[in-house]
Length: 364
Image (cartoon, rainbow, N blue to C red):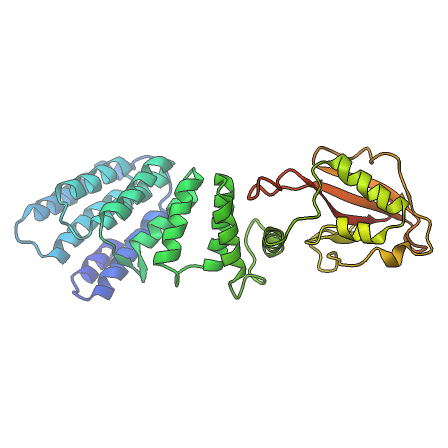
């Protein structure tokens, strides 16, 4: 039976581009599957050395066709991979690419070197070669996917700063929109802009995410409530935000005064006009039936409403609870929930306070 590299050699002799791509793909995935480890003893056997020397001699011959030269370099690298001789593999491929800048397959040689570095937990060096492929090598196709596309995918995963990931994501969206989930990438791009503090671009990316047809149904790993959270943020961004108060004390005093005077119009004015919720303690804010838009009037008429003189002890510097009673025969106790506005996109609003919701019943 022919070995993997014998099959690669036979395939690479075919001039068809599809065969070339298939051969490259086989070696690429073989590289990705290699396990970490030391150089195996067979790397030093006479048969191995003789094979490599023979291939090296063949590579030095003048007038080699491009396909043949590719196959020889590929075979030499493959032999090194088979014995996990990563140092020799990296030196051979990078030196070859450096000394043969016109080789049209340099993107592939650098890609193999980058994979070898990944296999040995040298992500910063792998990142360097992925970036070099993008900046200085013409693209190649591997099983229908471009090497540039593969590099961008890896760079997004291993890059350690948001600014770089933003650049890579934008490249993926602009260059390969048909090969990715632009919906998910717009959301993740918005998160990266948030980390960078670029709130105008974050809002823009969240809006692009919400504009996608599958935004409400797509599940994004790590963000179970992605759609709801993005929708709430954009709704808040597009609202007048005129219900916010400069301080918690000012907000609580206004709400207490409204309750004491049974001024439902004032209370309706103080409630957040975006994302206001009313729910039990067992529910979560993202539940479909937790979002409420109602007037306080129907709960105040004929009832004797009372407020605690102080905020609940569980209140903190970013959120607060006020216990109230007398709203209904069914659920007598309501906790009014206040929170500090977290919206750096608008410095005039960020850090103010809003009445964000109501919890029904005694605290659990």
